[in-house]
Length: 262
Image: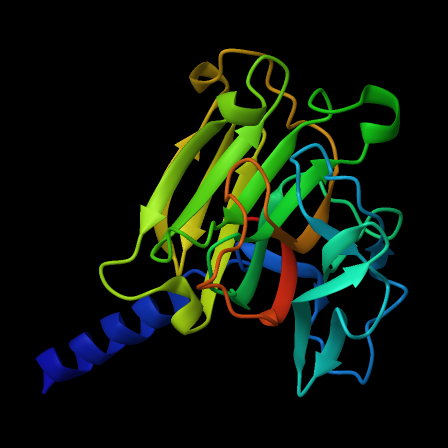
């Protein structure tokens, strides 16, 4: 009996002495769940225009709901084969520039990408000093890019001074089976002062630090978010007879977290 009482006393003391749980590592600071009836104009800018966007792209980005709208809790970006302006395809390019930009944290989105030769969906970040610094000095962080001829592969890349365009520092993540367009996946980076890490569905597949770069580390200021579906361009090539339109990218959410404590 004495031993039992002693054990209970020790257990009680151990329970009382247990440290309190610390704050969560990631705290949500901005998000869009796309649960409304229309795109939130206080969070997103619809960027418009043709001209190739420096990549010989074939689409004209419009501000029409036909190319970007909310449907049943998803943001839907639709690439269409149609003549608009000086282009034979339309799509949408949305950005948070002017409404939201963040320095460090976890930035993620749950996305089902489109499929087909010539499609180029992307979820990425640009330095908000681009008006003054220009590209690539402002820095670019590509969280997810896919080109249609690689249905089971996505890419994570950084572009900066001395390592931009085809010289960007990039890694790929391959599905063991199937295509990324088959279902939703979560694409994310975790960004700290001296490291950026890339994830697909919580699988870490790439880390970049300043020593990995042939040029200057320019990821020390706020960046804004971009979502778009390009058609054609130097990298994906043009659509062909196998490409079915319209093609859609569905986005369940975009979330930004900041690190708070341990």
